[in-house]
Length: 284
Image 1: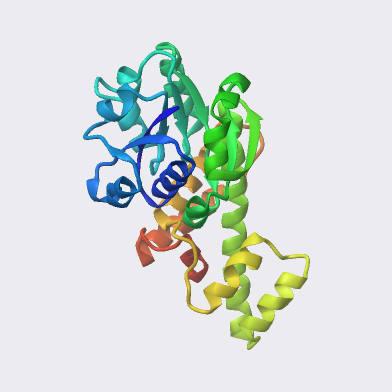
Image 2: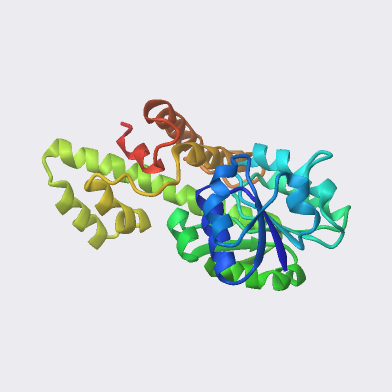
């Protein structure tokens, strides 16, 4: 399969590197050409525009920061939908709005372009090592066609049904992660104020019923001064806003979603949106 890949940030560049290592034919495009230099050296083919990277591809992959960027790339006369060939497959690996994904998928279907939503979890490290978790939505036949691509970039692949289920699964997992992160920040602050050693408190948290992935995987390095993953506050705030939007769609109330959006907005303003999302722990 010929793959056209759009978006070479922390996630996209790692995914492309693993696709090349598995022998896939990959052409790439990004608004910042310098991001492609190492990938070109590894065998990727540079394209100068979205139409160029799209027109001869069997699979068009997108790895973009959010819904606004996705619409810009997919829609319009020079967008993916207008320029992809009939029978192509669009595979998006970002975390996006259900409404926008379904709108774009419908427009793609009108041109006989199949759509797969495959938001990923595992951060830049997972993209680099090919160990991402992937929550895949789309029809089974299309999923089977691109399963080899998914296996080149992820180690845990879950086909969860339609597009919306994949996005909802990813947003739900991020919701839990953000809640855990904020709560850990409060607990550590309380412990410090009371005079409890944070290293000892961390070990007790990990040994108790309040442990979590954040406590196990991130907290030790955070206490050592390493802020953790390259997943930024800007991206976390975007996801929190998408989570909050679910309250308008579903009857189930996500009681912490509005507060999380506000906390992450404040953290972006205080520390800078390009900082690790774990800085939200410092906001009291």
